[in-house]
Image (cartoon, rainbow, N blue to C red; front, side, top):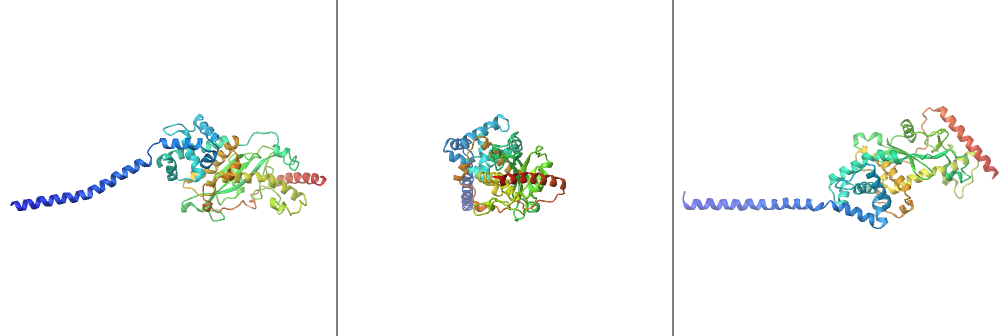
Length: 396
């Protein structure tokens, strides 16, 4: 091989090496850039700790917007979870884990939203949110339960409209639909009469607006009466001689006193410009509606404080059905520690109302489930109360 051929081969190899570097260097640059970006997104696990501390020590409204509760209540709850062994400090403290969950249900925040807010990995949020969902049943049993009180509530005893007629009343019960998301192949039973997907949730409350019982997880196609029947079968018990107030979507029994049907009932029907009650049925319905309004107010507070109850979420269905129970637990803890519900009026919704799901109102008529004896006893009790009330009313 002559010198000229050797020179041509050498030059071709040099050109090939230059061309290879032309491709390698940009690729190496992109690779290194990606590594730098990953490192920068979550630079330090201390960031989330500082963020939570900043919110708790800042203006009270910052804590209310982020976590829907005052700082002193948040701190009590974090200590309770730690002391009771329900959550433990790891690299990430209990306060942060509580903050993740409260921020999630207060804003319907995705894991990406949480990463942006608290600067941890998506895996961390997935792990700790799941841990919190796992303890919701325990918290529900501890904080959502009737108070053992032998005497009638002061709201009954201090008002001649209600005492002695409702002296054995423990509170009121009502159902409400909460949106869910579901795979299309399993949607049918969860589709309510408005055509959206929901679970039918029942709560009972006392006259201090504490949630005393809750039943979650019934499909949106289920009626209020069926949800109540299921709760009774699962252990919901009303003490002998006591009763709750319910609306026309439930059967009238000794333990669940409903208004008279085909008779004026709603408060607006007795408002300004409307005639006074004309008979014992109307009088009973009017006073029944005033007291039963407590559970409607309670639902209003729950949905204002935790607007996630208005929208579908990204969680598995086994966790979606626990969200109303979580809201009820936090609601009761907030009330137990003197949280101010009126502060909610000045807070943003956190979730765009345009995203709220259209849901049905309560059932107007109860299911006829063939409990004739209970109906008769319930009707006799209602008539007895209503007639005594009417006789006293006419003497006023």
